[in-house]
Every structure is written in C-alpha cells, then in structure tokens.
Image 1 (cartoon, rainbow, N blue to C red):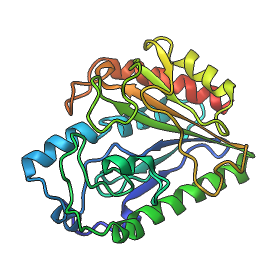
Image 2: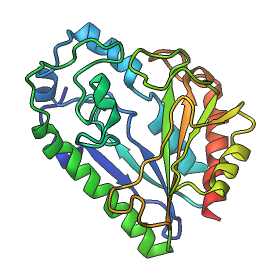
Image 3: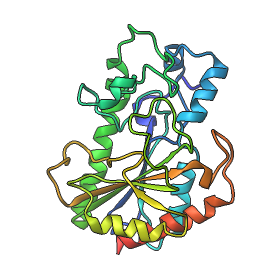
Image 4: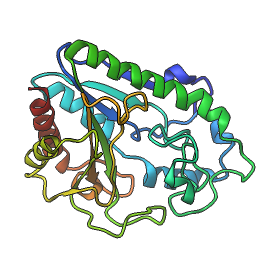
Length: 268
C-alpha cells in the first residue's frame, strides 16, 4: 500500500500517434490502493487479496501496452493506476448508478460475493472528490484533445470477466462468450461492432452485450457528440489467464493480435 498517492498519481495518459483517434481505456487493471483507503476496508489481508483476484481485470494494462507497441498507428492509452476498490471511474457517482443495488456504485460497499467491504456509515464523498472527479476531468480532456486533433474520438474500453458468474452480477444469466462487446445505442455505430467481430473472430465467439453491456463515454459528450464513439471489449478470463487472479497464458498473444487488428482498423 502507498500512502503518498494523490489524485494525479492515480491515472496516466500515455500518448499515442498525433493522428490517432483511438483511446484504449483501461479502468480496472490495478490492485494498488493508498494506505488510508485500505484502512477503511473491513476485509483482512487474505480476504482482500482474494477479492482483488476476483474484481481486478488482470493483465489488461499489459495487453493495452503490447497493442500500443504493435499497432501500425499507436493508440493513446488512459490507464487507471489504482484498484477499482478505491473508486470505480466507470460508475455514475450518484443515484443513476444501477449497481448501487448490490453495493457497487462509484465507491463499493460490498464485495463480488456480497460481503460487506466498508462500514455502513462510510461516506463515499471524500473518495469521489479526491479520485473520481479528477479522473473524469482528465479522461474528458483526453477525448477533447482527440476531437480537436482528428475530428473524432474512439474509446475502446478494455476489460475482462470471469468464466463463472459472480454473485454481484445483475445481468449475468445470459451467454458468456470468449469476447463480449458492450455497446451504447448512441455512441456505438454498427460498423464499430462489425470491426470488433472481425478482429476477434480468431479468439472465439463474439457476443454482444452479454453478460455486460454499455460503453464508457465522458458525461460531457454522453448522448451529445456523435463524433465520440465507443465500445467495450470484455475478455473472458479463461481465454488468456489462470483464474481468478493468476498469470497470463498462451492465449494472451492471440488477444494482442486481435486487439491490435481492431485498433488499426479503427484508426484507418
């Protein structure tokens, strides 16, 4: 744990090619947690490590980095350097968030298995102010920069998900394909979905919006700016790693090739 981390250390924008519109967004890859945040979590160290195994999208930052190395036009990368147990930057920070029903709004109060994570009386606002809002402002600025430079921005959310449904999942009773593409009715045009289906065809079945749906867009542009497009790539973990929190395996290189193909297609 690191008690010196501040908001500006909690995320990183890694530059890509000046003419690339693509931002690989990696929000859930880290296990890092500032010491004061750790003190507010009820789990003992062993239970916390187990929870991090289940909740972390392991190796997705490494995947995005490998794609940036291989892509013909280097994408930009926006990477969360803190665990989503600090704040989840992809949740709404208010009552609009449906995951509040299972204690997983912007600041989680429950674990993947519905155990208590934080005290009932814990106030989420300090964490939202310190980490959530600076992250959102920085991601908004990154999108604005791509719009100004290229006339468009394409956000590709890079996630992973477990082979077996976890108790916190609200919509986990549908298919769990090797690749799930999450879409947004305003920001995900059909051609983006078609490019993703083509790029990931060699990995396995590509499903749409099951078990997870939606795509991240900063609120400034959400349902307002059609030149900001987005899709979410959810990779089933058994295709590339040992679950729940183990090392990457031979499938990792295949995913690098597939995601690189998607990034190159989006940049062209």
